[in-house]
Length: 454
Ligand code: AMP
Image (cartoon, rainbow, N blue to C red; front, top):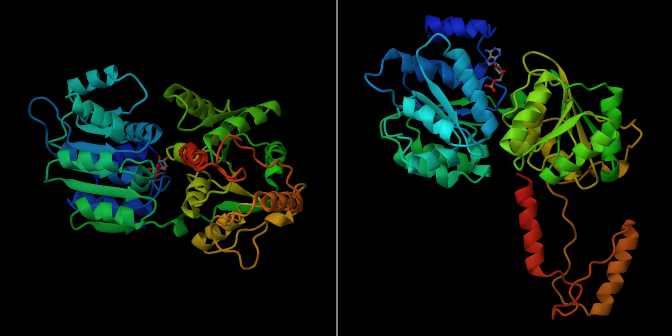
């Protein structure tokens, strides 16, 4: 195993690494630092928690410190991050690693007053860490010049695309000078990311710390089959039984996260939600409370959780199983950091067994199950021939049945499933068949659902 000295880092950076308590480089650091120092482009498949920030921050700092800027400082390194939290954490890492160097960095993101950011930029900086929207805003206002950037990092590229930043990224790329060094990190490498990488990386070294390796052995995983309606009680029981002081709960939607926080509060469990609809102030407060131990449970959606870097998380609860198998790996990677152990519980309800099949395919093994708990529901266990992915609800047939027949069928279906839901009623004035859901309504709810899941 290599040590940091052998990677070619300068004395001042080695001192900083030592004061952070790092003794050996992580695989992504070992593989990316030497080529980056040699001026190569790097394409890295790695997620948060693997030490990837140091993998690019250390070489960037070293390259920056080789030459001193004459006159006013200008932006020589640009790091794009999808979320504010991640941007702030990258900024913290730059402060730590650059402690002994004369390199100034600044973090900018939206949702807060731009004036302090503009003032700091006017003084001159060497390294800029930014989210795409605020970066473009300030470029358009003439406060930022990226035409002399020598080092460009696109972090969490898959998340960037998920969040709809592709056009912003392309705009930024157009403004950068041709000659520069590039680095792209992504937790997954779908074709869209490979295409994006191909569009601006030159002769890049490929580094792969793939999710299979990342499903670290230190994380104990357990799946519990449960009815949707019983998930909350199961969660409360586990939190109380296991005296969880630092745990993170993942829900699929922002609304679900808010509701769960209220319900946990009623069970006298201190929780806070963190998701894209929360103001920057509320997110920072929730994270600070979580870090200092006054909040035991953080309820998060996937995207908001990306930047959370808290070492002592002992429990991860997949309250809703994620529909993207890769997200499962990201989520459980929130625990068992920095050499500690952790446990990840997955609650699988009757509509999620296909997601479980997909997750198990990705990680290449079956996850242990706990069927001895109070709320065990065998109806949620995947069927032997279950396909991965969403469990398709039966679509209504395209044929226009006469109303009376359809109503009769609807009634039968409801009673067979034991569903208590009433048949939906629509505007009687509509010329549409009464049992058909108006298309616009359908689309709107689908749109809201996908917006809410970010
Ligand atoms: P990152 O993947 O960059 O978000 O880093 C995850 C965590 O690992 C952070 O808390 C870092 O401080 C820590 N870390 C990074 N590199 C090392 C290392 N070589 N040894 C121990 N911890 C590290």
